[in-house]
Image (cartoon, rainbow, N blue to C red; front, side, top):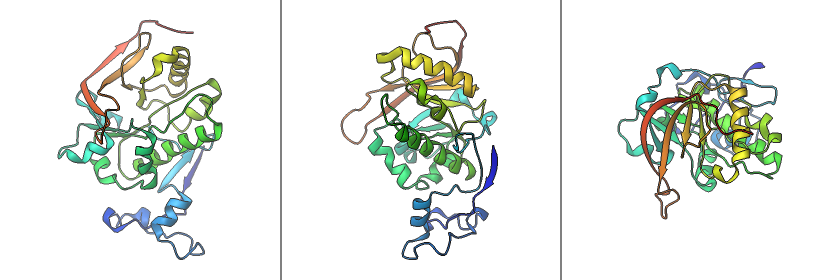
Length: 263
């Protein structure tokens, strides 16, 4: 894995108030199209702000840091577009289990919610869709976006947990890349009961490769899951109107050691 310092650092939009951050002191290549703003250039070239590492699959690596400072016992999951409604955010885990068309806004404006995310206990990377029979280039792109955003947010002071998704075994190398071993991860069980074999094969492989210290589950626990968990249950999923997701949680850490459902 190579340690890399990005040479392409941008000057953000004024509302971010980050101009004093040393990561922003260098400009983009002056030979690039001069008709674009620095932020527009940034969104085209997609450099990673700050130092970073790439794994063997050229995926930016989200590091295992700050988890000891996270109060998992009192963590509260909140949809990312509702976080700004909370004055006190120190116990909030920002999650993005919404339609892709909703979380596309995060990719289009990656620093737009940075202030809110930095004040949260943690932020989960966006859950861009990964489906069976999806073209592998799209699987790679959606996983890259997940990790790219996570590394940038982490470099700018956020406590970041990667959201992990998978489908068939031929996606595992990509889907489980870009994560340092031992860090907390976030997964969803929504819709997984329709194909338990795919879920449990991937779940087992995820634990083997990432070795997460804790697994934050959004949705119902499925019989046979083993590990150390925090579980948040969705209520009124995909309700009509702007309030698409309402989250209800009874935060606690629990461990399941029994050998359960497997293939």
